[in-house]
Length: 290
Image (tube, rainbow, N blue to C red):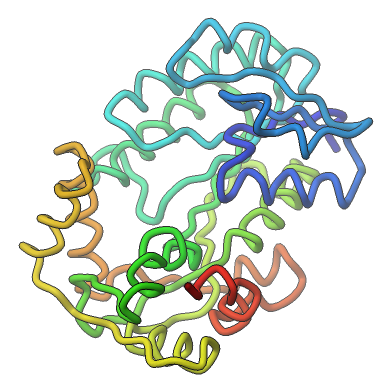
C-alpha cells in the first residue's frame, strides 16, 4: 500500500472522485495536482496537500511528485499528449513513484485508427517503457457526459442531439470510476500489469431519454441528428479541428455499436454493482432541471 498518492487533474470529473474516495478510506496521504490550487482548497485537510501542476508548464512537473510513491495519471487528450506523458514520467520516476493508475480509453492502441485510442495507446507504451508498474482502467463513456455536454439543451428544450442512431453503448458514472481508481491505487500488487474495461450498464439514447423523462417528470426526447449537423454544432462552439475530427470518430463508433464492454471487471473491483443511469439521474436531478 502506498504512503502518499499524487492525484492528477484533481478538480476534474474523475479526479475529484478519486480524491473523495481516498480521503474517505483514509489509508494514505494525498497530494492534489492542479493548475489552479485555489480551486482545490475544499479538498485540503491534515492528510491532503495541494501542489501546482500544469500540463502546459513542464517546470511544474519537477517537484510535483516529491514524496509520492503512487500516482493517478490523467492527461487530457490533445495532440501534444504523446510528448507530455514521457516528461511527466521522467519526473515521477526521479521522485520515487513506484505505481501508476492511468485513466485510459476503450480500445487504446498506438496503431488505432481513431485519435483518442491512438493517443492513449502511445501513452500506455510510454508508461511501460518507463519501467514504472501500472494499471490502466478504460471507461467506455461517462454518464456525466449527459449532464456536462447535453445538459444545456435538456434544460432549455427537453431534448438532446447526437448522431448515434439506436445503438447500445456502455455507460459508467464518474463516482464509480473514482472509487475504482482509489481501490486500485491502494492495492498495487493486485492490479499491476492489468488493463481493464470499465463499464456500468448498457443503454440506447432512447432509453436514456425515457429514464430522464421519468426522473425529471417532463418529456425528454433524443434527436438522432446527421453527422453534418453534429459537426457544425461542434464547430459553432469554437472546437478546434483536431477535436471535431476526434469526436466525430467516436460518434461513428457509438453509432456502429462498438462502444460496449462488460461490467464484470468493475463489479469485481468495487465489490458491488455499479450505478444505473436512473440512480445517476436521481442523484443529479436538480442539475438537469432549469
